[in-house]
Image 1 (cartoon, rainbow, N blue to C red):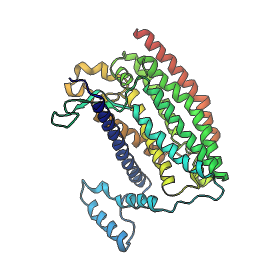
Image 2: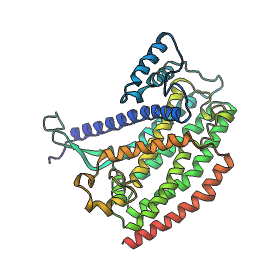
Image 3: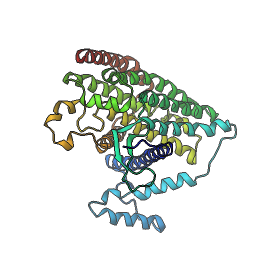
Image 4: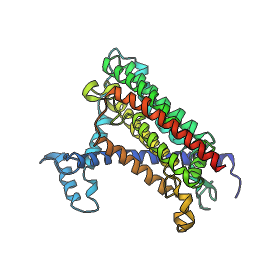
Length: 385
């Protein structure tokens, strides 16, 4: 295989970045739409699940069209698309209001900070180890060259993801402070305390895969956790997954850990004073962070691009058909989608905790449990060596 030139390397890097951005901006709107549909069915709400009334004009025309579309079994799921399209257009076209006494620069910076940090965290996620595919010979400039399974599968990938993702909390805290309003400030303070508290057990839970794999590189960790551990490595993987995914709900401010927003107490929390696309950046940032949390959980605990979770792939690989024994990016994406469904499912079924209960869960239960899991991971590594 020929060594790529500098120009070819830059072009391939640009293509990888575009593919990652496309993935993000495909899965996030679909997640928002799926959330409306799932919650609509759970709570028997109109609109997302079936026609709401006998509207006239454009709304009535679209609703009746979607109702007819819904009678087709395969296409019935897409009933409710007009509501999503309408909300997107409303967000784009809505007037951008700024409080008179708000800090203008910081008020503008905060949503951008949260959004950019969420997107950049995906840079070190590897969808499949090694080569994703090879460009055909007829492709100009990059023909015959491989495209790797991640945008930047660096040897400190986990540190990059955790470092960049933690920057997102600054956007929330700065938004509450810059709004010069009491409810956003209370929400931002809650968020700062909550995220700092839950980052401790979250990081400890991720140290278990680091310890067992001996690496910080995303693809190497995913490969080792899926195929390179003995059967007793299942226990710290399962325990670590439960701790990590619970912390993931708190880190993304999702129910039952949505105290920074808490609309029945704080109107809307840290983004109360935001409208239009500034609010949209916070909204999108939350869903992108959900995808990042799901990607890490799928990659380090659920087998990543391999079929089976918790290290079972390495135990049964000799007995599987060849196509099930190889890594596939589709397996990884399906696991991300399933975990995103769990985020939605929990939102529709579990009520919000009190704030003291949220802090108690982190400091009294999750941190000791994560430390015990870290000890189990150390024993697995010692016995495996």
